[in-house]
Length: 79
Length: 412
Image (cartoon, rainbow over all chains, first blue to last red; front, side):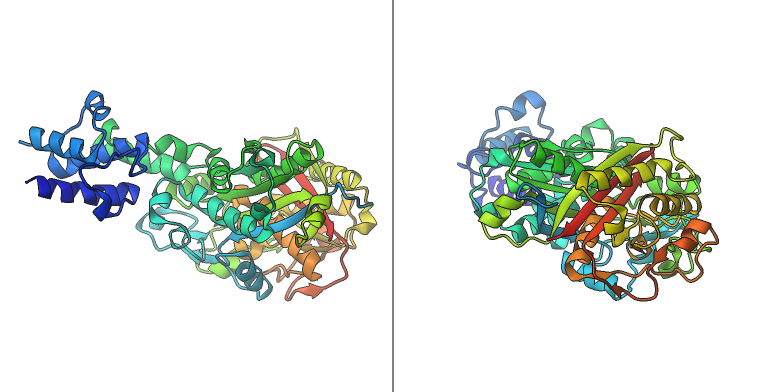
């Protein structure tokens, strides 16, 4: 389950921000390690909603710092 | 007249309907090839004007995919042309402080493709689906900003907007920055990419575009009796300007000198040119004075000549009254189409190359010159390029709004 989410997230990161799928591991920070800026985070949130049916509210988006944070959020909120 | 403080051109870049760089564009121009084609998109079928001069090389083939998706097409072409010019100049390795590097990059319309594309998203899917990159991609300073980031310029990034004179205005502005000692190196240019139904429909509604849909290569025909409007083009061109002294000190290749510039406004009509080209002539005269040259010194004029019925005769009158009848005139839009805010920059590149190579490109499709007295009086090069001994040349550009720009280049 979490592996599927990680793989799906990796696809999104590659498409939106050019992150190599192998680099999209749970401990990585979006801004520090993967060079994903705040506008790209908004695009990622939209793509996550399309792919997983999970909307990330703006006030939650700020708390998602790492790939692992995103995986947990999606896992927790997926129907 | 020249001195070590003159501005010189040390880098050229372009991506155009004729080629993905300066060399291929210039070769295609001299070979007489046309960049115009009939569009085959579904939306075109409803359009009165169905022609455009689209890019020879897609920008997606020239820049990284992830970078490209955050840039409007106008910004993509700006970056492609600018990076070519920058690399060719060698300025990046010259140790110039980023705070002494400036950018002036114009556009006529800006990120219209993004604006209209995201409006479609808004209508179809709602506000939450609009891209967070919408604003930086549509703003008219976007090409300048993207170029500034690409070359690491921190000495000021500027974006003149004066319709089809924007590219030329950027060059004049760059000259001023050097003269006022606000920068040591300035990357100047223009970009445009609006081959889209709305701009096409808008220009067609003005009856400004050629509807010679069955003959794409023959549609853009400046100064010809059969001309019926311009053909929209897309692309970008860029030049690196610096002082002759610094270019010499670092052993840079100098393509030509930018000796002077002039700008005026018609104060006549929002879109129609003054019929005698009064404002245009004043701009050329001002540029000559600025360069310290007389009309007799000018061997070549790269004309704005868009192939509209009223524009070309007004310009012919302006060239005749300000330069005279001796200069070899070329209307390169006959092959490139009209790149709007990039036109002035691309034609400045052509003017520089004409001086460097001592050859004036031919004006395509000039089968039957207009009966207008000024058109008849000018020596417009046609059929094939003409070798000439040139020491100075004028490039003029005009824009809706009554903007008139003239640049004077001299040999290196």
